[in-house]
Image: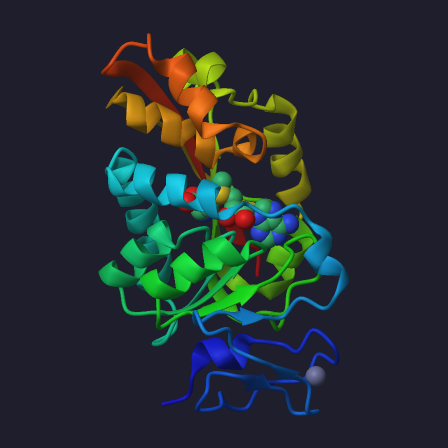
Length: 283
Ligand SMILES: C[S@@+](CC[C@H](N)C(=O)[O-])C[C@H]1O[C@@H](n2cnc3c(N)ncnc32)[C@H](O)[C@@H]1O
Ligand SMILES: [Zn+2]
């Protein structure tokens, strides 16, 4: 059976194709550029300069994995799954999903469990990719910087998942098949507002949302735009994980955080607010 995900991959050096995957998992393009598989199952396609980014640390990824495993965001995952399945159910026999900023692979796993598909999962954090490769061993989990041109062929992808991750509209437009779907999840106004201060969360940038719609309007038809609001009851551990898994995790000291949260309500009633936007690539 042709490997649709592999066929969608494009060599970042020469735009060549990858005919097959070696037994040890390595990738070698038609021109001979080789990318080894890490022992943990992901493949680093980054070429030198991409590695300068400050990536999510192992502790941040562990906090995210624990928070998600507690199931707080499972209604969001259900909404993503139903939008993704809706997008691929009439697509090609072997749809290709691109998860742009896969993190621990939590959402992609649920999409793949709901509908047979092949997947390419990109992230810049090798700690995230270690988890993602364990969570979704059948996907091509690749270290890549989403701000760079994607190592993906034009018109080769049926669905892009872009969940709380950087967006690259021109590249998303290039790699999607005509009629393909882009699903974008962003935090909405008031997301985790109750714990924002305690957890050192950053504010939501309203402008970014507007810029997204503007950046997408030429190549995409805007579809449903859903607001999802969840009433959570977070333990102190959950609140600490919410803090450590976000950007604040780069500089928070876990011990100091625990001390700061010692007097916090437990459980703490908190509203999680998301926006799930669907865009269809114009034909
Ligand atoms: C908030 S997490 C979301 C992960 C996952 N989609 C989820 O919702 O659980 C954002 C992810 O984007 C990744 N990321 C940040 N900047 C990136 C970049 N320039 N290129 C690729 N991935 C990036 C981070 O490593 C992190 O895993
Ligand atoms: Zn090449």
